[in-house]
Length: 206
Ligand code: SAM
Image 1: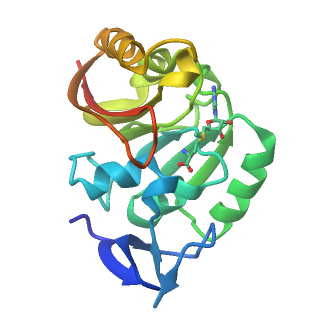
Image 2: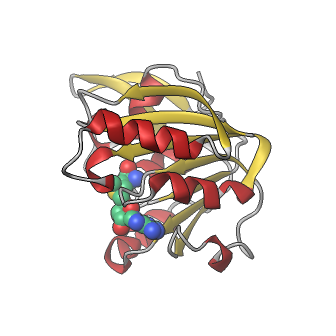
């Protein structure tokens, strides 16, 4: 188990928990906050003991941070955490989340344009990506420049964001093939039942 991550039962719910200020009304006890799998694809993978590369000293680039639900837990356990989000409204909430977390750096940027934040982001051990837009593999490929040679990409692919009309399995196959232009896929499994029609991928740079 990663330092700073523990399995807890709080208010009758059992799951992974981190230590930090609460963010989204999650159950808390003695400074621990439950990490809700139904609101976080990364939590599903960690709960399955998938090797994500996340550790207490990892540097993280998080793409698609939204209001900070998942990235707040990441910053609770990891080192410097760069959180990219392109929508102004959730980024305002993210700034509040970062106020309690000196290692969390919100960036109001488009993950398809890494050159706009390349001057800020250092080489990272883990890229977590959850952007839910068309071209999810391309976003991962274009941000690979930040990933250390021994780092890991933790990608959540939402089938409907690629094409609502297509069978999710064939969308996932296309995304996997495109991703293999720059990554070797170590793990790829559905995130059901917590996130319908999402594929969780862990990959290493080639
Ligand atoms: N990862 C978040 C969590 O678990 O708390 C939820 C992310 S939500 C599914 C997807 C987010 O990605 C949205 O907030 C959306 O604005 C953001 N997003 C989509 N395309 C983006 C892009 N090109 N650059 C940055 N953020 C993007």
